[in-house]
Length: 380
Ligand SMILES: *Cc1c(COP(=O)(O)O)cnc(C)c1O
Image (cartoon, rainbow, N blue to C red; front, side, top):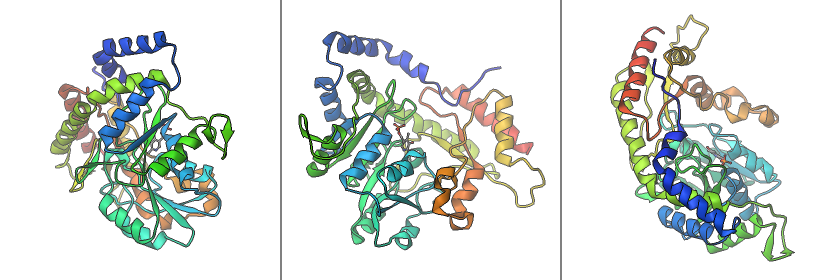
């Protein structure tokens, strides 16, 4: 039986193997492993791609969020509004700088922050909003920026899953005050290890983040603030420069696959397919369906879990992003959120299932997934 993995990074490597080997060899031979012209060239090219004046590379998407929050002097006593439906790093870095994450419920169609609910979550302590362009789908940045402007809040875009996505023709990461990117291998632009970057149009913010990422040093051996050490390796920069040239093609392949899933899965009544919002272009880091629980369910197994098990039996991998919303993580119990406060994300976490989608997924493999879902859900 053929198996369909949820993701296969080795296929992409095969495609660019020769180019990568040459670039890696060149870095190894150069003797320049930290900083230098390759890292600078990547920052320049990435900034150009995103449409941001300034790009500063760093060690991870997590560090990018940390740098952005610190650039705004966000710390103890401050609140930052974000989504409970994201990877832990988003809220974790708010806590790491000493501030408090404030969770606002999501829109079940887009899986992103419900912008309608943001104003009522704003207090005198609120300093920033971190929208997450989850699964590659952009947040409505026009509305979000209008809300932020009227309350004088900073906007830090978490673009970790959305490199190349755009809102009204502008790339995410170029619209808010700072964009945070991850080059973790499974992201749309992934390194062969860890990596990240922040983007901004504001030279002062860029300068602040440069200083913080280098031990708080404004000039060598003179530290003016408590910083960290966060660098993108020259080896990773060399690999990312190559992959950046393929990114649009890979994102288009993802879009084609997503359209095909939609075409075949949309008619199934038990399954809710993800919708692209008007004016936005998703880059489909994940294709995440919702498998709804009938209200008269007698089985103890959730339909989502039933389908996931069925797919597994057919050799098809699927993933649950995310099984537990952030307000219910043990680390955030102390914030005292109740399930009733965030009902949409509570329900969505029981229903979501991310299907195999990566640029190299073949039509045959995708047919297997579609066929198995049609079979599988009919047995729920
Ligand atoms: C991956 C991810 C991060 C963290 O990026 P790392 O490079 O793994 O540190 C942050 N936010 C979101 C939404 C992510 O998906």
